[in-house]
Image (cartoon, rainbow, N blue to C red):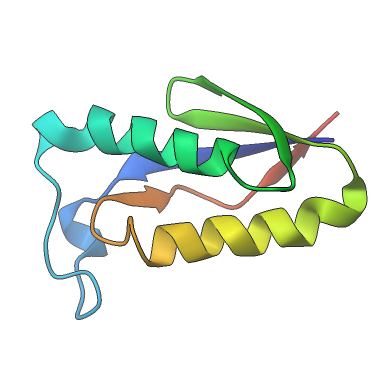
Length: 94
């Protein structure tokens, strides 16, 4: 099973009480690469590639999809809350 997840940097309209600051442009690639590595390290993930800012995440079993969704949500809402944001949700690829 493959899922696509578009990621982007935080912009001014994303700022809030829980996300009070933005990442400097020069650091985006570093944090994006670190996020890709963190997703690769998830137990349910077998492969991660990216096309620009779109992650293509492969998992072995459909039953692991909820585990993937929750784990990525936790990553984005903790370590990357002031750095990256999902542009939209996961899209299942054929």
